[in-house]
Amino acid sequence: MLPTRSIVALVALTTAATLAAQAPSPSSGQRYNRLLIRNAMVIDGTGNPARGPMDILIEGSTIARVVPARAPDEFGTGRRDSARAPNADRVIDATGMYVMPGIVDLHGHIHFSRNRQAMPKDYVYKLWLGHGITTIREPGSGEGTDTTVAHARLSAENRIGAPTIVPYVTVSGETPAAAREAVRRAKAKGGVGLKVFINRPDVWEAIAEEAKALGLPIATDLKIQELDAVGAARLGVRTLEHWYGVPDAAIPGPQHFPVDYSYDDELDRFRWAGDLWRQADSARLSAVLDTMLAHNVTWDPTFAVYEANRDLARARTLPWFPEYALPNVLAFFEPDPHRHGSYHFDWTTTDEIMWRNNYRIWMRWVREYAARGGNVTVGSDAGFIYHLYGFATVREMELHQEAGFHPLEVIQHATSNGAKALGLSTTGVIRQGFEADLAIIDGNPLHNLKVLYGTGVETVENGRAVRRGGVRWTIKDGIVFDAPQLLADVREMVRRAKETTTVAP
Ligand SMILES: [Zn+2]
Image (cartoon, rainbow, N blue to C red; front, side):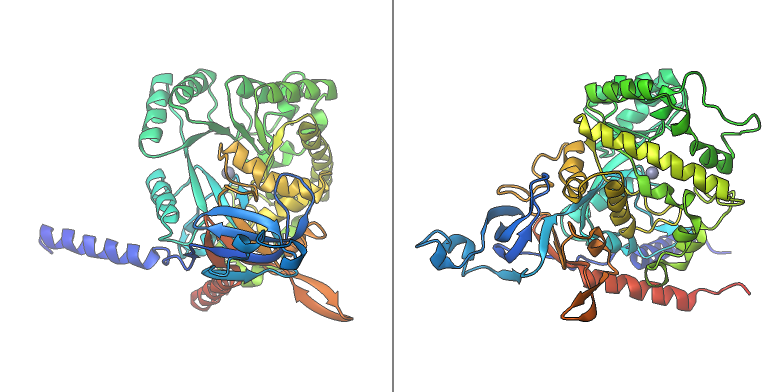
């Protein structure tokens, strides 16, 4: 038997070694005093039409100038000198490319493991940055507040390659007093917002009151509970995640679930959620939206995370899985009653049709909310239900287009609207004085949002089929990341994991 002191030393050693092995690699991104992006088409993120070609001059972490990239003699003397910046430390030639603000994913859980197996700690970060995502709101992480807050700091200091992390903290409590204490603790630990999905109105009120006093915005995933979207809006909730609570507030009486329904059975829960929009009364829904609007609620619908419900075969066979999905991530998605979101047993034709109809009504009301002036955002909730980090955020954007939004509006949802929801007043727009968060894309996302996928798109050039697309450079806070290199790193992680994964016979 080892003496106690040796055991302690051994444990400390092992822990340090484990941590080192799992730590995210140092950032591969670099910031420049003067960075010039030349000759790019610019989508500014506000819904304005594309302009260009333009030159964008970035000084440190700030956009210093955005000016037309015409030949100097078209301007006469002097005007172009500072933007042409002969003394730029770095010039990126973006001829033929589009630049948009970096994507703000409002619902990005940081995961360091799936299916109880550790993943390289930069796997998720690289998939995000590789898809032009420069900010994520962490809506409550299983990795713990301390880790999320620490990584937010490391990312801000460019010591790890990751998007800007906005850490929200999940709070709850058995009693109002305990919940108030949890809110104060969340703030003390460095949380800048709260995620709430408890089911007890008095506790909800205590949290809302304490959060208001401490200046912490609340994001809620209401699921099925006493409080609905109207109640949440009145309590001052900043963002409504998914859609739970919206149709519920417009159904006269309780939801019409089958008599043998159990909320704690995930198959029951997800299956019958697919009937709620049909049950909602239109006139009531209209009033629910007005209340949300009056209380300035942002709606973060996360359409794509439920897409498996309307087409399970599509969800299970996505073309990026072979090269980009770690085996344990895919294993996590497979049906198992013990895992959250892995409920697709006995998933029927009838279920898929019910969900397709659910989507049609849901999308119409999200479109209506934006038409009335409501803030609609892009959030992925990746890591659940066949929904892979990075790719999932792009898919979410595609579903916003399916909901009836113009691609310019979709990009606005994914950039400036997200920044607005987070209270980031100089993020999400390509504009002088704003933070240099940008995605430089090999293609035109207004023509085809799919150019944002790391796997690119097939197109024809000079009569020949070619593969193009993907984000070429992701710039976060002025730090330039080589997006294809980050994605190559991910492919290598996946290749290695497959080598070491023993497949059951
Ligand atoms: Zn979530």
